[in-house]
Image 1 (cartoon, rainbow, N blue to C red):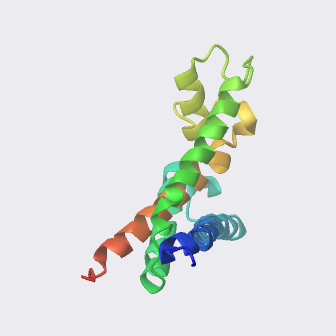
Image 2: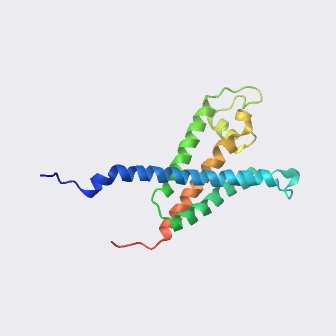
Image 3: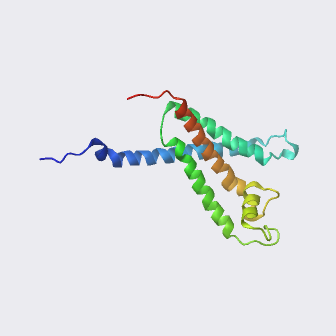
Length: 168
C-alpha cells in the first residue's frame, strides 16, 4: 500500500523554491530600476537645477515613485504574491546599514559628539547637515535603495489589490 500524500505536501519544496526565486527576482527588478534611475541622473546631469545639484528630497521621491510604477506594471502582467514582500529586503538592508553606522567612531568632521538618532538622521537624510560618516553617501547606500524596494512593494500591492478577486 502506498501512503497517502497530499498534493500540497508533495509540491511544497518546489513551491518554496519558486517563491524564493521570484522574491529575489522582484528585489533585483526594484534595485535595477533604482540603479537605472541613478545612472540616468548622473549621465544627464540636469542643468535646470542651480549648480547642477538635485535636492535629496527629489531623489528620494523619484526613488520611491518610479519603482512603485514599475512594481505596479510588472505585477499587473504577472501576478505574484511575493512581489509585495520585497519591502522586507529594504528594511533588512536599512537595519544592516544602521548597525554599521552606529558602530562607527565619531570625531571632528565626522558627527562629533552625536547621539544615535542624530548619527542616523544626519547620515541617511543629511538633516540638519551631513554627518561626514561613510563619505556622506548614506542616502545613496541606504535611504534611496530602501525607498525603491518599499515603493516597488507598494506598487505591487496596489496592483494585486486592484485586480478582480476570484471566488474559487
